Length: 258
Image 1 (cartoon, one colour):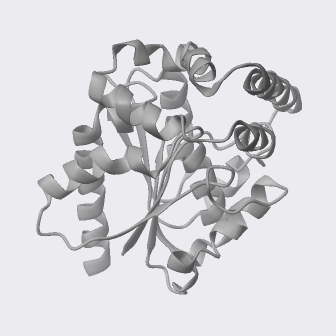
Image 2: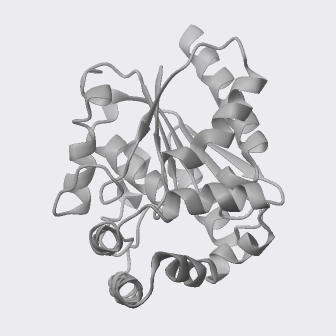
């Protein structure tokens, strides 16, 4: 099954590499076909709305050729929201879905408006600051407070991807792909009849709650909580995430043989 990976906001495909290395070390004989996608406004094609951007990603040559359910979409944070939307758009083209730190969308109108206002302030920050200063302010958010403890290697990998972006593109990403612009997908979850793996850091309390709620309504959901990890679980705990994904793959193999 083709594995297609979607990174988070202000990130890039290289941030998946530690996870890829861990997965290959744990299952060296498992054949893999991987596709690292760039999100819209992060080097990928762009469209005017959240949903249109997700549909446009389906036109990527590596995905467009697969008419059968042979794609395993794997997304982190914003990439997880994009992957979930893509699966809702074309469920028959998705054989499995792994969502890491996902938010299925804001239902409350006030919350959506407040999120759009918050993202507008971040867009202003991109006008006033260089990318390194913006990254420092972004990391000061409570959800990323743990980044103060990143290793030098993790920090270099993170900054190498982040500092290559264009601020105007990131501004558009916040406007078009922000949580306040994303359609709420909670009503779609009970009808998403495919295996869905939700992975979340155990210290990421808000997203633990969201993942548990989603898992309760998904027809075929599996929840994996990584102890000691925060929202950056892919970057900080790649071995544990790879192990959880390997267990999900074994489950998929059993389902395929049943």
